[in-house]
Every structure is written in C-alpha cells, then in structure tokens.
Image 1 (cartoon, rainbow, N blue to C red):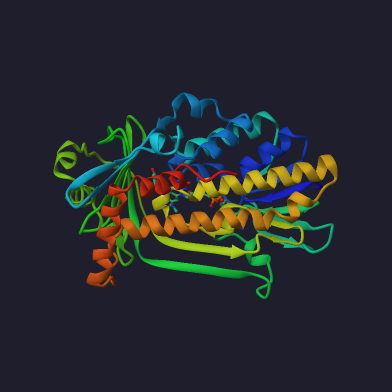
Image 2: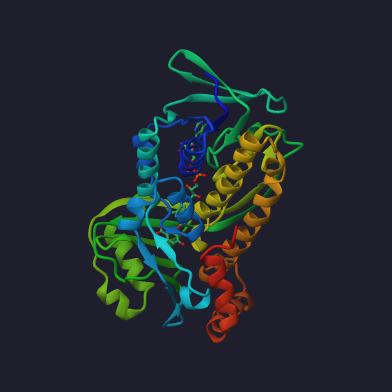
Length: 390
Ligand code: RFL
Ligand code: PHB
C-alpha cells in the first residue's frame, strides 16, 4: 500500500488525526493492533476541554457530543469535612468543560471514518517502523501469515504508552522523564443516577475518591487503592462502602449503588518522552506522555498534539512548508510539560501519600486552605482544568 501519512494506533489520537487529515485532502492509513470492539470496550476519559470539543466539531464528529454530552461549569472538592466549589466559568471568563465519554467519542470517530471510507486496518500484528530518517519511511505488519507493507511520507506514532513507535527511537536520542505514584485508582461504572450533577473530587484521610458520570443514568466512581490491590479483592459492596466512607455524610447518604458494569484498577504514572519527532516519525498522545488522571489532562493533551500535527501536515502538503512539522516537538512539549505540572499538582493535592511525613501532610491541608481562601489560586487551577490555549 501507499499513503501519505501512516498512523500507528486507532485510539482517539490516531482516529481524530486521520479524520481531520482526510477532510483536508491528505491520505492516511491507520494500523490498529486490536479489534474495533476491543478498542470500544475500554472505559477511560470523561472530561473534554474546549480545544478538544472544537477539534471534534472541525472533524465533523461533534454532533452527538453536542446533543448528548453535558456542559459543566464547575466541580467540587470535598476536604476536611466540607465541600468547596470551583466555579470554572466565573474563574475563566466564561469557559466550561464537556462531560462525554472517550468510548462514545471513539465510536463517533469510527463511524465518521466509515462514512468517508477511511482505511483503518484492525488486528494488525507485529507492526514495525522502517527507514524513519529517510524521506521514504515504511511500516510493515502481519495479518495471519501475510506480511504487508505501507509506504508513506510520514509515520505518526499514536499507539499509546505500550506501543512500538516510541520504542523505535534510538535510546541515545530518546530522553525519558518519569514519576510513578505509590497507588492506583479503582474505577467502577454503574447504571445508576450520579450522586451529584457536578464532579466531586474528595481528599479524605482514607484516600482520594472521585464521583464522576457519563450521563444522568451512568455513573463513574473511583477510589485510591494501594498498588498491591487487585480487582478480584474488591466486591461491589466493598467498593460502595469504601466510597461512602470517603465522601461527606450528606453526599454518601444520597449515593445510589448498583451492580458494577465495569471495574478496573489503573496505576498512576507521570511520564514524558523527548523529542516527539525523530526523522519522519511524529509521536502523538499517550505514546509520548502519560499523566495521572486527576487533572483530566490525558486525552485533552492528545488533542493538542493532534492539532499541532494536523496544522503542520496540512501546511506541508498544501504549501510545501515543513516549518510546522519542524517545530512540532518543541510546541507540543511546551504544552505537555504544563499538563505534567498540573496533573502532578492536582494528584499531590488530593491523594494520601503513604510515605508523606506529618510535615508534608500539613502542607497539603494548607494548600487546600490557601486554594479556597484565594481567588487567584482558584483561577490558576481553573485555567489549567479548562485547558491552556493552543
Ligand atoms: P490510546 O487510547 O492508548 O490508543 C492507542 C491505540 O494504539 C493501539 N496500539 C497499537 N496499534 C498497532 N500496533 C501496536 N504495536 C500498537 N500498540 C498499541 C492500541 O490498541 C490503542 O487502540 O492512546 P491515545 O489515542 O493517545 O489516547 C489517549 C487517551 O486514551 C488517554 O490519554 C486518556 O484516556 C487519559 N484519561 C483521561 N484523559 C482526559 O483528558 N480526561 C479524563 O477525564 C481522563 N480520564 C484517563 C482517564 C485514563 C484513564 N486510564 C484508564 C489510564 C481516566 C482513566 C481511568
Ligand atoms: C472520568 O469521568 O473518568 C474522570 C473524570 C475526571 C477525572 C478523571 C476521570 O479527573
């Protein structure tokens, strides 16, 4: 096969980029290791910033999101027995976020790809990247016994944290920065009415908890757990009991419980790789950076990568200018480091760290008190949560 841009990974980053490019006359092939059903069974992000919703609309995929998604103007932080609200809209001069599940927007992207006849190759095994420092890179993969080859101008690595793309950059070129947290999030999805119309992030002495939602009949809840815990250890009843203990009494009393329809543990990690471009390989999304989910930045950061790449690739094909692609790594990293900082800060603010000294615990409580006593501090939180400009 021959294409202009070969995209490795059919998650939200890869699909969104291929959709935007095709609508602007750039030809792509997407290679995805899993089946479509598998990709659509992953329950992940829920909160979208305005930049991301704008891109989805630009890709012709915003219709269902605008109909079924919920615009949120604020969220709550429960701490020290009280609940405070972050008024996103008032603090940011009118901005808000959209609550719409990653699973749903991935489904919308697949359907849009189908409508345009976009080429997405599922169950592509043993994907390998070749000749990345030449002007004629190519990608090989296996389907059954057959080895197939895609010749292209550029390869985009949108294959997530465990993908092959980042690993194709020589170790003497790749710089990695990482922080692993000593806990994970146990998440439950349940077909119940959400306990609150807005998200509640809770800092509690038993550990962090989060009440989120997908719709008015679908709730998503999380509790911080030690890394040694496994999903099998957590019955639904044990999960609901623990969640209730970490919420303010009046919220816990209103919590509607029900059978979990998904339950999983995600370890928390901060990770970023530099550079995001190596020859004709461009990395996007989780393949280049991971953040703990506390600040709801992961998918949104993937969105800004896609935006910079889309603009750079369109300039390359329309105007013959490679300037946007040459500055891609620098521009994307500048924004991604800010997402790293914010996600680390939100995580530090809201979790219990088993190795923290009493001094550090006091500082954490002081940070919360300062936050809710200072409009300037709340503004700093809000402008990051709704997404820095790009
Ligand atoms: P993905 O979604 O991992 O997709 C990568 C795709 O590449 C495929 N792949 C390969 N294909 C071919 N060959 C290979 N060798 C391959 N290796 C892998 C995979 O099968 C997959 O389909 O990365 P992408 O597209 O960059 O998207 C990133 C987002 O998925 C991620 O950042 C977010 O889910 C993070 N995240 C959140 N982000 C937000 O912005 N807001 C949130 O509220 C939010 N909540 C979350 C989250 C992530 C969570 N988990 C489970 C880590 C909540 C949770 C619990
Ligand atoms: C979610 O709904 O899954 C969600 C919401 C906000 C976060 C993380 C996850 O910060």
